[in-house]
Image (cartoon, rainbow, N blue to C red; front, side):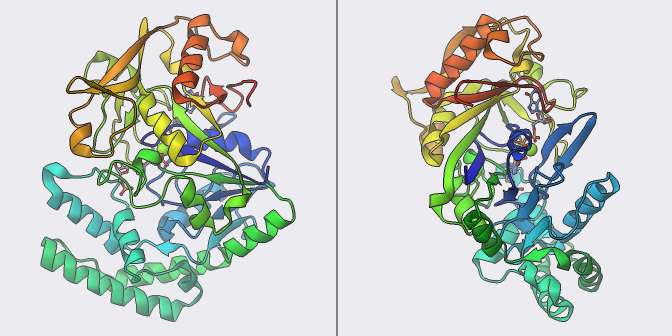
Length: 432
Ligand code: GDP
Ligand code: IMO
Ligand code: MG
């Protein structure tokens, strides 16, 4: 398998990190292709939990090369902290096994200040961003005003360009948003310090990946965010600013489409969304609270990056079908099935109803989507603890029926079902 892409099919936090961790065992290279530290990918390795924001989820396998691609936006301070924390836990973070594309863009402190000021200005129409400066950093990239990571090699030029950018951002912060400016000299000094630490990681990663694929190495492309958060294909404007879908893996890593042999969509068995925006199957009742959990389990639905409680609701297979179409999914992994144990009757949406008509495809127009009601199929629940299941035959009949229903409604084969956050808590199917 030359390149295998893992993408989120919903609004993020489907469990992509743990799915990447599973497939990383058979991959030479794991590469993130988009987004920045707005992502939070949790992986459980034995008794340890790793919460990764920038470093790819293959990092705990000592022989796996981890690449941060040109499609990413990098807060250099977060990256340095994450690498140092991993080193303190005994993980090998040496340059050569961790590569940072010199064409990735840098997030400056003023990008973060602008993100916050713009959200405050949006008032009731705020996107609910992660406040990590993601939108403003990609805006500068598209405006050809951004700073590429390659500058980390050139302290003088880095300081000059960062100063010019920060001063320009400060004028906007003060003039347009009446917000506090950022101390440019302090920011530049901090950037200089972190640049010295990060420069050895810089690499021409598209060239590296091209050569590795030519040598027959296997590449796992780690999606962040998800299909409904994708800048083009999500429910704009309640999206992130990167291409989270499969096309983003091609531009965000600089490799050709002929390598993409498998595209796996990660489907959480219920829906969550952490920011604002449409959510047809959202539950505002006790069942929503039940799906979220109280926060005492590490997997309960509170943001890895921001700690915000996630909005929760039933699974919406209209979205999964949409994700299958946009990404050309070859298979899906259903995650967190164990969380549904103990619920008497489950609901799965397979269409929407609007003004007496039934819609089976996701409306792209938010005004239309706002008028849609989900059409549910009720399914029997199960009471058993399924966290020890390792084969489909170990699952109670109702759990198998749930998986088969999702597979049928998604129109895509299920290759795996996860039944707990631990590495081995996986049920592989015949398609796995
Ligand atoms: P990502 O952003 O898509 O990588 O997902 P997150 O890591 O943000 O959120 C998924 C959460 O669910 C993490 O806490 C995972 O450890 C946890 N998780 C993943 N798979 C399972 C599962 O099968 N069962 C349970 N209970 N938790 C899981
Ligand atoms: P992972 O990779 C869930 C959401 C934010 C907000 C919108 C825009 O862990 O699945 P941004 O800060 O990107 O400008 O915010 O996108 N968002 C995520 N939600 N999981 C993520 O990543 C997310 N990354 C961004 O909550 O609604
Ligand atoms: Mg996450």
